Length: 279
Image 1 (tube, rainbow, N blue to C red):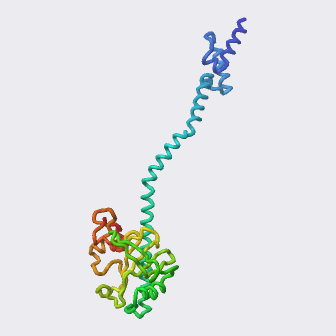
Image 2: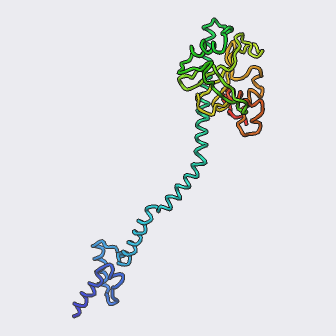
Image 3: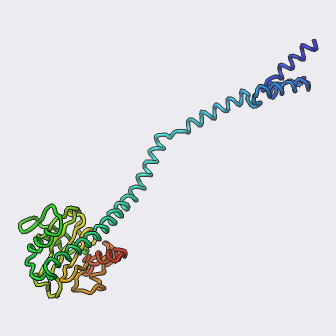
């Protein structure tokens, strides 16, 4: 009778759950040792109780529920991203366009300088006597630049605007270069004394993105003066340090609509590798 009772006690103490939760007080020392040994050999975790199993299942279920996002959470996130994008994307696009136009202006100025030097050399060093604006377009622009089309008398004029929003000016003698740049002759004097300033042969404009907007000096349009010995990025009627040739105030900053803020200084500042906008 004693042996049978002892075996029952050992059986009760033989599992992790019985040992921890239901091992009777009658379990003797030998029975407890027997239960611990059995647990060790079976590699059973004493915490593997039905109660703990249920808790783990609940935790796993909760984790699975939190692994995804609800529709409301997704919509809120997308709304926040949209708000941020509405503030940042326009600035990024503007900065990209600004940098691209700056690089194109430098390239166009360099090509114009090379072409004018070659034109002068081919004419024996003198450009005086080239004739009218249309003649200059034919003998200079069309000969030294690859172009896809031209405009002349009777054609639709190219229109652009000064930086200070002065009256639109039409150009009827120009070409659209194969890289998309428009080059037009604004004014010319075959004797190279344009408006009484000796050495000035013509004033030209370059639009670095062709007929795309905004067609405004300082943004995508820049002035170049053709002289008897070189080209310059400003009106020689004024000194290089005059506000006409250094001002490049971006609207609507103070002073943008002043008479000196025509935009002539923008290309000059670009070529000097300084900040384009002076205000």
